[in-house]
Image (cartoon, rainbow, N blue to C red):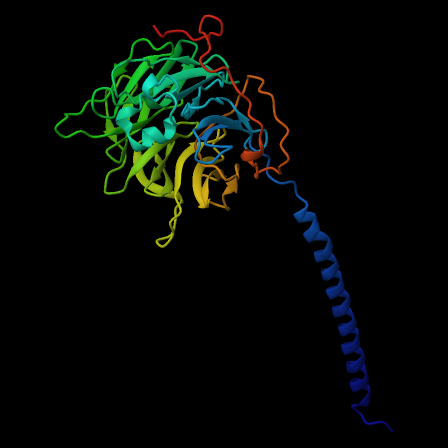
Length: 388
Protein backbone atom coordinates (compact mmCIF):
# COMPACT_ATOMS: atom_id res chain seq x y z
CA UNK A 1 0.00 0.00 0.00
CA UNK A 2 1.45 3.29 -1.02
CA UNK A 3 2.13 5.85 1.59
CA UNK A 4 -0.77 8.20 2.17
CA UNK A 5 1.30 11.19 1.10
CA UNK A 6 2.61 9.63 -2.14
CA UNK A 7 -0.12 10.78 -4.48
CA UNK A 8 -0.02 14.40 -3.44
CA UNK A 9 3.76 14.48 -3.85
CA UNK A 10 3.43 13.14 -7.42
CA UNK A 11 0.71 15.68 -8.21
CA UNK A 12 2.81 18.53 -6.82
CA UNK A 13 5.77 17.49 -8.94
CA UNK A 14 3.68 17.52 -12.10
CA UNK A 15 2.29 20.95 -11.19
CA UNK A 16 5.79 22.36 -10.77
CA UNK A 17 6.83 21.00 -14.16
CA UNK A 18 3.79 22.59 -15.80
CA UNK A 19 4.57 25.91 -14.19
CA UNK A 20 8.19 25.69 -15.32
CA UNK A 21 7.09 25.01 -18.91
CA UNK A 22 4.62 27.88 -18.82
CA UNK A 23 7.27 30.21 -17.41
CA UNK A 24 9.64 29.22 -20.20
CA UNK A 25 6.98 29.87 -22.83
CA UNK A 26 6.23 33.29 -21.34
CA UNK A 27 9.94 34.18 -21.24
CA UNK A 28 10.35 33.14 -24.88
CA UNK A 29 7.34 35.24 -25.84
CA UNK A 30 8.80 38.23 -24.00
CA UNK A 31 12.16 37.85 -25.74
CA UNK A 32 10.45 37.64 -29.11
CA UNK A 33 8.46 40.75 -28.28
CA UNK A 34 11.62 42.65 -27.38
CA UNK A 35 13.35 41.39 -30.50
CA UNK A 36 10.67 42.81 -32.74
CA UNK A 37 9.67 45.91 -30.79
CA UNK A 38 13.13 47.42 -30.27
CA UNK A 39 14.14 47.45 -33.94
CA UNK A 40 10.79 48.98 -34.81
CA UNK A 41 11.48 51.87 -32.44
CA UNK A 42 14.99 52.36 -33.81
CA UNK A 43 13.61 52.60 -37.33
CA UNK A 44 11.56 55.71 -36.55
CA UNK A 45 12.44 58.51 -39.01
CA UNK A 46 15.01 60.99 -37.69
CA UNK A 47 13.98 64.61 -37.01
CA UNK A 48 13.49 66.65 -40.15
CA UNK A 49 16.57 68.45 -41.42
CA UNK A 50 16.26 72.16 -40.64
CA UNK A 51 15.26 74.34 -43.55
CA UNK A 52 16.65 77.60 -44.84
CA UNK A 53 20.15 78.90 -45.44
CA UNK A 54 22.96 79.94 -43.12
CA UNK A 55 25.30 82.83 -43.87
CA UNK A 56 28.74 83.00 -42.28
CA UNK A 57 32.16 84.45 -42.99
CA UNK A 58 35.23 82.29 -43.47
CA UNK A 59 38.86 82.42 -44.52
CA UNK A 60 38.33 79.26 -46.58
CA UNK A 61 39.72 77.82 -48.74
CA UNK A 62 43.09 79.05 -47.40
CA UNK A 63 43.21 79.42 -43.60
CA UNK A 64 44.72 82.77 -42.68
CA UNK A 65 43.71 84.38 -45.97
CA UNK A 66 41.21 87.22 -46.25
CA UNK A 67 37.61 86.45 -45.32
CA UNK A 68 34.56 86.08 -47.56
CA UNK A 69 30.83 85.60 -47.08
CA UNK A 70 29.54 82.06 -47.58
CA UNK A 71 26.09 80.49 -47.60
CA UNK A 72 25.37 76.85 -46.74
CA UNK A 73 22.43 74.54 -46.07
CA UNK A 74 21.75 73.77 -42.39
CA UNK A 75 22.83 70.16 -42.99
CA UNK A 76 26.24 71.32 -44.23
CA UNK A 77 25.65 70.77 -47.94
CA UNK A 78 25.67 73.24 -50.83
CA UNK A 79 28.36 75.66 -49.67
CA UNK A 80 28.80 78.70 -51.92
CA UNK A 81 31.29 81.57 -51.65
CA UNK A 82 29.28 84.74 -52.35
CA UNK A 83 32.04 87.36 -52.24
CA UNK A 84 35.22 85.87 -53.64
CA UNK A 85 37.63 88.79 -53.95
CA UNK A 86 41.14 89.43 -52.60
CA UNK A 87 41.70 91.48 -50.58
CA UNK A 88 38.22 92.21 -49.27
CA UNK A 89 37.73 91.33 -45.63
CA UNK A 90 34.02 90.56 -46.03
CA UNK A 91 32.57 89.79 -42.59
CA UNK A 92 29.51 90.05 -40.30
CA UNK A 93 26.92 89.22 -42.96
CA UNK A 94 23.18 89.19 -42.26
CA UNK A 95 20.11 88.30 -44.32
CA UNK A 96 17.12 90.59 -44.67
CA UNK A 97 13.98 88.85 -43.30
CA UNK A 98 12.77 88.05 -46.83
CA UNK A 99 16.21 86.66 -47.75
CA UNK A 100 16.56 88.78 -50.88
CA UNK A 101 19.30 91.06 -49.54
CA UNK A 102 22.53 90.56 -47.60
CA UNK A 103 24.27 93.29 -45.62
CA UNK A 104 27.95 92.90 -44.68
CA UNK A 105 31.08 94.80 -43.74
CA UNK A 106 34.07 95.04 -46.06
CA UNK A 107 37.24 97.05 -46.61
CA UNK A 108 37.08 96.49 -50.37
CA UNK A 109 36.81 100.26 -50.67
CA UNK A 110 40.01 100.66 -48.64
CA UNK A 111 42.34 103.54 -49.44
CA UNK A 112 44.99 102.88 -52.14
CA UNK A 113 47.72 102.97 -49.47
CA UNK A 114 46.69 99.57 -48.15
CA UNK A 115 44.59 98.19 -51.00
CA UNK A 116 46.95 95.27 -51.58
CA UNK A 117 47.14 94.19 -47.95
CA UNK A 118 45.07 91.57 -46.20
CA UNK A 119 42.17 93.66 -44.90
CA UNK A 120 41.04 91.24 -42.21
CA UNK A 121 44.52 90.92 -40.71
CA UNK A 122 45.10 94.66 -41.03
CA UNK A 123 41.93 95.43 -39.08
CA UNK A 124 42.96 93.08 -36.31
CA UNK A 125 46.52 94.40 -36.12
CA UNK A 126 45.78 98.11 -36.42
CA UNK A 127 42.12 99.20 -36.47
CA UNK A 128 43.11 102.81 -37.03
CA UNK A 129 44.35 101.90 -40.51
CA UNK A 130 41.36 99.90 -41.67
CA UNK A 131 38.32 101.77 -43.01
CA UNK A 132 35.68 99.08 -43.40
CA UNK A 133 32.30 100.07 -44.78
CA UNK A 134 28.77 98.65 -44.92
CA UNK A 135 27.75 97.00 -48.19
CA UNK A 136 24.62 95.31 -49.48
CA UNK A 137 24.22 92.74 -52.22
CA UNK A 138 21.63 90.38 -53.60
CA UNK A 139 21.46 86.98 -51.94
CA UNK A 140 23.27 85.34 -54.85
CA UNK A 141 26.32 87.57 -54.34
CA UNK A 142 25.67 89.96 -57.24
CA UNK A 143 24.98 93.68 -57.21
CA UNK A 144 27.37 94.71 -54.44
CA UNK A 145 26.78 98.34 -53.41
CA UNK A 146 28.69 100.28 -50.68
CA UNK A 147 26.39 102.23 -48.37
CA UNK A 148 28.86 103.96 -46.05
CA UNK A 149 31.72 105.59 -47.93
CA UNK A 150 32.78 108.34 -45.55
CA UNK A 151 36.34 109.57 -46.05
CA UNK A 152 36.77 110.16 -42.32
CA UNK A 153 39.39 107.76 -40.93
CA UNK A 154 39.04 105.49 -39.17
CA UNK A 155 35.38 104.56 -39.69
CA UNK A 156 35.34 100.82 -39.06
CA UNK A 157 31.67 100.48 -40.01
CA UNK A 158 30.52 96.93 -39.39
CA UNK A 159 28.51 94.51 -37.27
CA UNK A 160 25.35 95.34 -39.25
CA UNK A 161 21.81 93.96 -39.15
CA UNK A 162 19.02 94.62 -41.63
CA UNK A 163 15.25 94.83 -41.29
CA UNK A 164 13.00 94.90 -44.32
CA UNK A 165 9.22 95.05 -44.71
CA UNK A 166 6.65 96.56 -47.06
CA UNK A 167 7.58 100.06 -45.88
CA UNK A 168 11.23 99.75 -46.81
CA UNK A 169 14.62 98.89 -45.33
CA UNK A 170 16.47 99.86 -42.18
CA UNK A 171 20.07 98.92 -41.40
CA UNK A 172 21.60 99.16 -37.92
CA UNK A 173 25.39 99.10 -37.71
CA UNK A 174 28.40 99.93 -35.54
CA UNK A 175 30.83 102.70 -36.40
CA UNK A 176 33.97 104.20 -34.87
CA UNK A 177 33.61 107.42 -36.89
CA UNK A 178 33.01 109.58 -33.81
CA UNK A 179 35.92 108.20 -31.79
CA UNK A 180 34.08 105.39 -30.03
CA UNK A 181 32.16 102.27 -30.95
CA UNK A 182 28.55 103.47 -31.34
CA UNK A 183 25.38 102.19 -32.99
CA UNK A 184 23.89 103.98 -36.00
CA UNK A 185 20.87 103.41 -38.21
CA UNK A 186 20.27 104.26 -41.87
CA UNK A 187 17.91 103.65 -44.74
CA UNK A 188 18.47 100.79 -47.14
CA UNK A 189 20.12 103.07 -49.71
CA UNK A 190 22.62 104.51 -47.20
CA UNK A 191 20.80 107.79 -46.59
CA UNK A 192 19.66 109.11 -43.23
CA UNK A 193 22.64 107.83 -41.21
CA UNK A 194 21.76 108.59 -37.59
CA UNK A 195 23.63 107.87 -34.38
CA UNK A 196 21.50 106.04 -31.79
CA UNK A 197 23.89 105.69 -28.83
CA UNK A 198 25.98 108.40 -27.22
CA UNK A 199 28.81 108.24 -24.70
CA UNK A 200 31.07 110.87 -23.21
CA UNK A 201 34.58 110.52 -24.59
CA UNK A 202 35.99 110.94 -21.08
CA UNK A 203 34.47 107.56 -20.20
CA UNK A 204 33.44 105.84 -23.44
CA UNK A 205 31.50 102.57 -23.43
CA UNK A 206 31.52 100.31 -26.48
CA UNK A 207 28.14 99.59 -28.09
CA UNK A 208 28.22 96.53 -30.35
CA UNK A 209 26.19 93.88 -32.16
CA UNK A 210 22.84 95.53 -32.97
CA UNK A 211 20.05 93.04 -33.76
CA UNK A 212 16.53 93.96 -34.86
CA UNK A 213 13.60 92.32 -33.10
CA UNK A 214 11.33 90.25 -35.41
CA UNK A 215 8.87 93.14 -35.73
CA UNK A 216 11.65 95.66 -36.35
CA UNK A 217 10.56 97.89 -33.47
CA UNK A 218 13.42 97.17 -31.07
CA UNK A 219 17.18 96.71 -31.28
CA UNK A 220 19.12 94.46 -28.90
CA UNK A 221 22.81 95.25 -28.52
CA UNK A 222 25.83 94.82 -26.27
CA UNK A 223 26.82 97.80 -24.17
CA UNK A 224 29.91 97.64 -21.99
CA UNK A 225 29.65 93.85 -21.76
CA UNK A 226 25.92 93.71 -20.94
CA UNK A 227 22.87 93.05 -23.13
CA UNK A 228 20.62 96.06 -23.69
CA UNK A 229 17.45 96.75 -25.68
CA UNK A 230 16.25 100.05 -27.15
CA UNK A 231 13.61 101.25 -29.56
CA UNK A 232 14.59 101.56 -33.20
CA UNK A 233 14.98 105.33 -32.73
CA UNK A 234 17.44 104.86 -29.84
CA UNK A 235 14.99 105.75 -27.07
CA UNK A 236 13.88 103.74 -24.00
CA UNK A 237 17.24 102.02 -23.48
CA UNK A 238 17.26 99.38 -20.75
CA UNK A 239 19.69 96.70 -19.64
CA UNK A 240 18.73 93.03 -19.53
CA UNK A 241 21.94 91.74 -17.96
CA UNK A 242 24.51 93.17 -15.59
CA UNK A 243 27.58 91.97 -13.78
CA UNK A 244 31.19 91.06 -14.45
CA UNK A 245 30.46 88.63 -17.32
CA UNK A 246 31.13 89.71 -20.91
CA UNK A 247 27.74 89.50 -22.68
CA UNK A 248 27.49 90.17 -26.42
CA UNK A 249 26.18 88.92 -29.81
CA UNK A 250 22.40 89.12 -29.10
CA UNK A 251 20.00 87.21 -31.37
CA UNK A 252 16.18 87.30 -31.12
CA UNK A 253 14.02 84.20 -31.19
CA UNK A 254 11.53 84.21 -34.12
CA UNK A 255 8.60 85.01 -31.82
CA UNK A 256 10.52 87.78 -30.06
CA UNK A 257 10.13 86.20 -26.63
CA UNK A 258 13.78 85.33 -25.95
CA UNK A 259 17.26 86.56 -26.78
CA UNK A 260 20.29 84.30 -27.22
CA UNK A 261 23.69 85.80 -26.51
CA UNK A 262 27.34 85.00 -25.87
CA UNK A 263 28.47 85.15 -22.24
CA UNK A 264 32.22 84.90 -21.76
CA UNK A 265 32.92 81.65 -23.68
CA UNK A 266 29.42 80.16 -23.57
CA UNK A 267 25.94 80.70 -25.02
CA UNK A 268 22.89 81.64 -22.97
CA UNK A 269 19.28 82.73 -23.47
CA UNK A 270 16.99 84.96 -21.44
CA UNK A 271 13.55 86.52 -21.78
CA UNK A 272 13.17 89.60 -23.96
CA UNK A 273 12.16 91.50 -20.80
CA UNK A 274 15.07 90.18 -18.75
CA UNK A 275 15.19 87.52 -16.08
CA UNK A 276 17.68 84.83 -15.18
CA UNK A 277 19.87 83.69 -18.11
CA UNK A 278 19.71 79.99 -18.95
CA UNK A 279 22.83 78.22 -20.21
CA UNK A 280 22.58 76.57 -23.62
CA UNK A 281 26.17 75.40 -23.85
CA UNK A 282 29.28 76.49 -22.00
CA UNK A 283 32.78 75.13 -21.45
CA UNK A 284 33.87 73.53 -18.20
CA UNK A 285 36.17 75.36 -15.82
CA UNK A 286 39.26 73.66 -17.22
CA UNK A 287 38.24 73.84 -20.88
CA UNK A 288 39.54 76.40 -23.35
CA UNK A 289 36.66 75.94 -25.79
CA UNK A 290 34.70 79.00 -26.91
CA UNK A 291 31.04 79.07 -28.00
CA UNK A 292 29.95 82.37 -29.54
CA UNK A 293 27.73 84.28 -31.98
CA UNK A 294 24.38 82.46 -31.56
CA UNK A 295 21.66 82.74 -34.21
CA UNK A 296 18.16 81.28 -33.88
CA UNK A 297 16.77 79.15 -36.70
CA UNK A 298 13.60 80.54 -38.36
CA UNK A 299 11.42 77.96 -36.57
CA UNK A 300 13.11 78.57 -33.20
CA UNK A 301 14.04 74.89 -32.85
CA UNK A 302 17.81 75.40 -33.21
CA UNK A 303 20.58 77.83 -32.43
CA UNK A 304 23.51 78.07 -34.82
CA UNK A 305 26.82 79.22 -33.37
CA UNK A 306 30.57 79.29 -33.94
CA UNK A 307 32.93 77.21 -31.81
CA UNK A 308 36.50 75.93 -31.71
CA UNK A 309 35.45 72.75 -29.88
CA UNK A 310 37.21 70.68 -32.56
CA UNK A 311 40.25 72.90 -33.03
CA UNK A 312 39.49 75.74 -35.46
CA UNK A 313 36.20 77.64 -35.47
CA UNK A 314 33.33 75.92 -37.28
CA UNK A 315 29.56 76.45 -37.42
CA UNK A 316 27.35 74.17 -35.29
CA UNK A 317 23.71 73.92 -34.26
CA UNK A 318 22.10 72.84 -31.01
CA UNK A 319 18.64 72.85 -29.41
CA UNK A 320 17.89 76.10 -27.51
CA UNK A 321 17.50 74.17 -24.25
CA UNK A 322 20.97 72.69 -24.68
CA UNK A 323 19.77 69.10 -25.03
CA UNK A 324 21.74 66.75 -27.25
CA UNK A 325 25.21 67.18 -28.64
CA UNK A 326 26.16 70.04 -30.99
CA UNK A 327 25.82 69.10 -34.66
CA UNK A 328 28.57 70.30 -37.00
CA UNK A 329 27.44 72.26 -40.05
CA UNK A 330 30.93 73.08 -41.33
CA UNK A 331 34.06 71.04 -40.76
CA UNK A 332 37.24 72.35 -42.35
CA UNK A 333 40.65 73.80 -41.59
CA UNK A 334 39.42 77.38 -41.93
CA UNK A 335 37.83 79.59 -39.25
CA UNK A 336 34.07 80.05 -39.76
CA UNK A 337 32.26 82.79 -37.82
CA UNK A 338 29.11 84.91 -37.47
CA UNK A 339 26.26 82.63 -38.62
CA UNK A 340 22.88 84.07 -39.61
CA UNK A 341 19.91 81.80 -40.43
CA UNK A 342 16.99 82.61 -42.73
CA UNK A 343 14.04 80.53 -43.91
CA UNK A 344 12.73 81.79 -47.24
CA UNK A 345 15.73 81.82 -49.51
CA UNK A 346 14.16 83.19 -52.68
CA UNK A 347 17.21 83.71 -54.88
CA UNK A 348 18.30 80.67 -56.87
CA UNK A 349 21.92 80.15 -55.88
CA UNK A 350 23.59 77.40 -57.88
CA UNK A 351 24.44 74.52 -55.57
CA UNK A 352 27.93 73.22 -56.13
CA UNK A 353 28.63 69.50 -56.11
CA UNK A 354 30.60 68.79 -52.97
CA UNK A 355 31.85 65.26 -52.11
CA UNK A 356 30.95 65.48 -48.45
CA UNK A 357 28.44 63.93 -46.12
CA UNK A 358 25.90 66.23 -44.45
CA UNK A 359 27.32 67.98 -41.43
CA UNK A 360 30.90 67.58 -42.63
CA UNK A 361 31.42 69.99 -45.52
CA UNK A 362 35.09 70.54 -46.39
CA UNK A 363 34.96 74.14 -47.54
CA UNK A 364 38.58 73.93 -48.55
CA UNK A 365 37.51 71.57 -51.34
CA UNK A 366 34.79 73.83 -52.75
CA UNK A 367 35.53 75.68 -55.98
CA UNK A 368 34.90 79.38 -55.50
CA UNK A 369 31.67 80.89 -56.75
CA UNK A 370 32.44 84.57 -57.28
CA UNK A 371 29.75 87.19 -57.03
CA UNK A 372 29.94 90.58 -58.71
CA UNK A 373 32.09 92.72 -56.42
CA UNK A 374 32.00 96.47 -56.91
CA UNK A 375 29.15 96.16 -59.39
CA UNK A 376 27.89 99.37 -60.90
CA UNK A 377 24.67 100.31 -59.06
CA UNK A 378 23.27 101.61 -62.33
CA UNK A 379 23.55 98.23 -64.04
CA UNK A 380 23.00 95.92 -61.08
CA UNK A 381 20.78 97.74 -58.60
CA UNK A 382 19.38 96.26 -55.44
CA UNK A 383 15.72 97.14 -55.29
CA UNK A 384 15.43 98.84 -51.93
CA UNK A 385 13.32 101.77 -50.92
CA UNK A 386 13.85 104.48 -48.36
CA UNK A 387 11.53 104.47 -45.39
CA UNK A 388 9.33 107.49 -45.10
